[in-house]
Length: 221
Image (cartoon, rainbow, N blue to C red; front, side, top):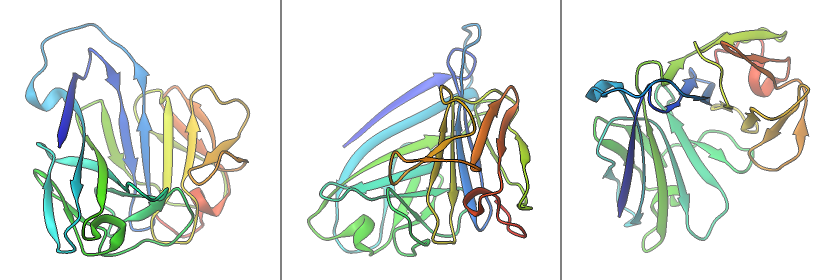
């Protein structure tokens, strides 16, 4: 089962950025809107969702385009797994935990590959997925080097949502929404507020504090 939406980049600037390297990834959504115009194929932000039944055997899942970020959830579990382009494994989203192999094995030109791990492919279980595609000025992918002190990360637009994922360490997924005040973020595993993480959303990106989840010194995020 598959459903898909495509938004012209300037008609609905819902912007996504995955800032990542081996240890982290970030998803940024922007609520900016511009003037309507005809959209070229490469100038469209795409999001699709669907489901599949696990077989226990590694296989591809088609989404209809090349995704830059995929989230998969088993119907009977609360934990989701996320993988962005550039990441080398999947990260639990909904609980703290290290990156896992054999879940979302790869992002491909037409979708993503799942491995044999029960996080994405237990025989007979139903899984739900959502895939986000990149587009110029809509989805931004990059990285930054952690230094343990405050950093401003440039995305090229004012984001409405930032998701930071430490992909290789046993850390929480961190979220920051546009209507949050102060320097508080929330964890993907709970609604608990966390300071020193994503401390602000700016006109051109976001700032991160000194917490290891988002700014571990010597790591690339």
